[in-house]
Image (tube, rainbow, N blue to C red; front, side):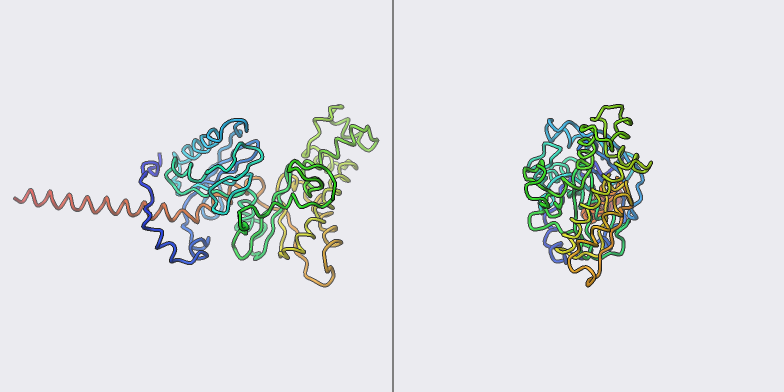
Length: 382
């Protein structure tokens, strides 16, 4: 078992003035972060995935378990995280833990203000876990973590201004500029899915109508397919036959699979989703002017069936088209593990706190041993 769990002494407050004298960008740069193993945790509505990640983004070991029911107390999820980290620490020398949470995280990256799939409401997750694990803990939004991973190790390498769009059940997002995640004043930047694109449109679970994710997401894709199947539309006969009439069995991966096999309706639905994706990206380009959009999340598995129409719609709706450089639109490379890898790599930025504290404890122990040995020698000579 890793000895780090025995080091329970709190990090001294005397270090704070020293840290404040170092520039923020230098202190938090991935270029100066220690090259040590860290654990990344990706918490979603259905699973908790944990992995040990090295400084080059390689996953040394991963574990996965189901997310505890959201009706249970937040402590149940915290217990699950702790068990996974301690299990991994039995075989790896873990120096820090990063949490990528599907929800709003405050600007201090301590509290989960709101998680739609879990019962976290203003939950001080970082402090709770750091107290139980005795290593530095970093908490961030899962889309921020995924964007960081793609910028460091995936499709966004070499880009100075990057926007990531995650297409899953809804739409998440993140902004990176000059190697820094832009979280906004209150920590909740990047909620692109709730930009209103159709006034008075489809009702969104957020409470508003016409949100972007109601037209370009996994939920939107499945909703449209089920509506056509329920109406017994002739174009839906293929998918109705595939699910043997059980319309509730229609899923996003199924639609993508049938589209790849040439089902005309499924291809058209993905094109519709892609076109709405391109419209939203054009709006983001007008506001943020990035050099690259990285498209991730489960729906991005459709690849060019989705991203091709998105590129076409982006070019048609881009403000100033023909007179300005156009951002690249690329598919994410790291797949469903991006959030875990990014959370682990972000945690490496705070791992030096643990390394310095550990080194001082070792130095104090060595000084004590030298002192004790000198006393023994002196007593034996008397």
